[in-house]
Image (cartoon, rainbow, N blue to C red; front, side, top):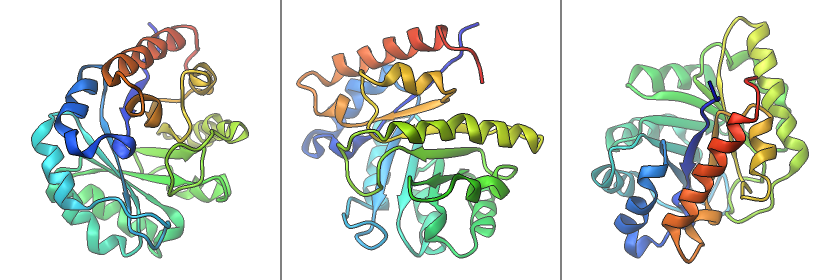
Length: 228
């Protein structure tokens, strides 16, 4: 059987004046919707908060993944889950008690994940692999959309999976940042379970066609790539 790879469109570059239309255009090709939450402190930009997540929850039945690039995480995770988030990922450098936060996220009914930016050593994720559901490998620097993928960071995907296996556990690995048609096959070949695609879909003149193309390419690339 071909290995299934999930598509998670990031709405960071979507047209927010027509958010219903944008999400509906990608919905049938997607497995979840990726929501980049930025607070202007942990990263320079500001995006949106729980109110927008709640509005998006009314638009789609797809799982919503909130990628939190914020400080004061314990104060906010419950609000995002109450707003409709099914998955929560956060950056290790933004939290003092990562293990406690992971357990809190799970206890309030969401799937917990951690994100590691290119400047964070991959081994810092090791101790959390047995208690998270997924790891977000960022192939760009957090805080800005439309960046070019840093190819050498892709090696982290297989490294994380090997380490998880050595610990007797298994985690999903998600690649976020700079994914486009030109590098999609390379991303999948590393054993990636979920790809986040933003500007390559939502900056297109035909959002639905762009999402459909990515979905078809993912299916084709997965069928040619062994499970890692």
